[in-house]
Image 1 (tube, rainbow, N blue to C red):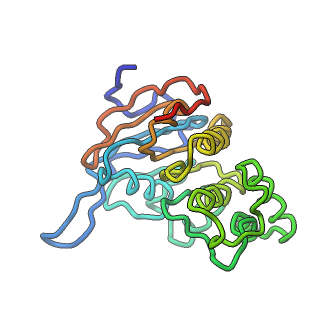
Image 2 (cartoon, rainbow, N blue to C red):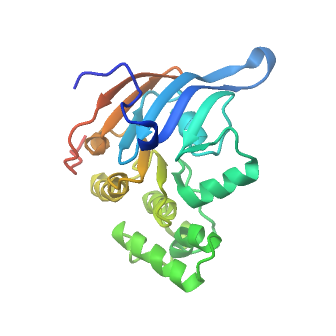
Image 3 (cartoon, one colour):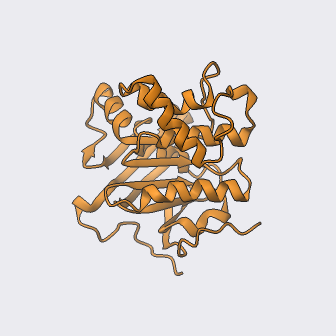
Length: 251
């Protein structure tokens, strides 16, 4: 479909899960500044799965880290679920993120001494769930991701793809209103990638939730409502995604 030059949705403000305006991000000091983001504007309505695509180093991970509240912008406005992240104190932002945001990092960041089920249960344990109930809920999510026979395995006993699915389970087990995924299928084969994206997509169709997926994996484009293309710290275009066919053709 033809690209749309305006990344803003036509949704009313109350219908927008993520609103980014004029966001810049610079790293370094003085003459060694690197401009990672150069005035990004973007809306993500509730009920949408938006994919961010573009070459490595174009600013995708920086942008989603800012949206998820794990990185401060240099300038600009970031409103997530109706809350101004830039104006929040660090402590309030941590609480907001813990209660409302799920983040799948490129690195799995699993705790080496905990089993797969215990790692996936961490957000629920932090929220005050009883351990048995948290592990049971996490085990159910892992089973849906094809890891029902790996619940008691330590991260060192899991393959890279299995560790990635544990990290995804950890991000979605507490049913976040905003899910941000950075390359969630990079270590997965076609079948496990399809299963994973189907589970992620189920979150996006709920009217009070939204999902942003950073990916280089063209096999998963069929799950996107819209696809935003980034280059050199800017969003160059936003196009409608293909219908969610739920298939991942082989490359």
